[in-house]
Length: 302
Image: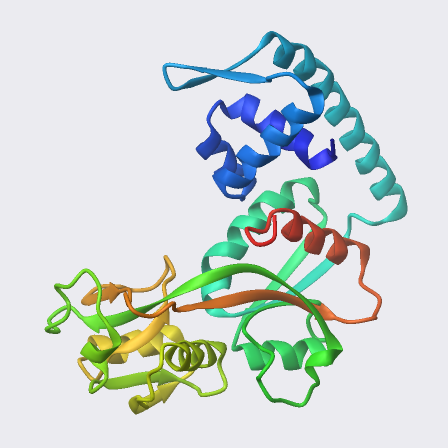
């Protein structure tokens, strides 16, 4: 039994639904189900039962819950008091991130983290993986969120960093709404092999992911690239204008008007997202807490 299991149990009791509780915990539903199942196995009794799709506490669950509530409250109060006395709950967290993560994932994580640390100030810049790593190497940010970075060259050594994969983003094909393929549910690579593409800068992780997927699938085709940019909305603007099609990772804040996003059925297209920090160097306590909070709620490796 661990602290995270108790938090999962308390959230599930308060929400009464696995899916909603998982969303509020920023974890997947299978992760939450596994956590509760392991807790029940350790206790040797069922904590919940279902009736008409509603979730209820068993007699054992009710008894356990009363103690869990008190334990969580007392531990959180003591941790807060110690952190205030030691100055661990104050300071700045400087974040560098690629656009898709900065526009959706990080705001949700910060919203969940910030209420317990009201004195902490956040600063965040949106930029390419290469620029994020350069800033991290030069100590202008504390932590970076980047795509596949191991093959990216720069004024830094990848061995200078520690990293953890926190999620995988699906790569989709963006086409204009009036494109002949726009009505399809999915496409195969031969359908688009002769199309004109709009591409990211060749040093970005998304290009590495696409190149690897094409090679693994046995395709030797090289994409015909007419425009190269390094910002997602610029890519979509060129696609919308009918100047080509593009591979892109979706994000809720994109302007999707006049566009259709399609998966490729014959390729496993995704890019891994990493949280990165400098190896072997002092990490301020509040930055370390933020890092550990993200790792505890990561969809990868749980």
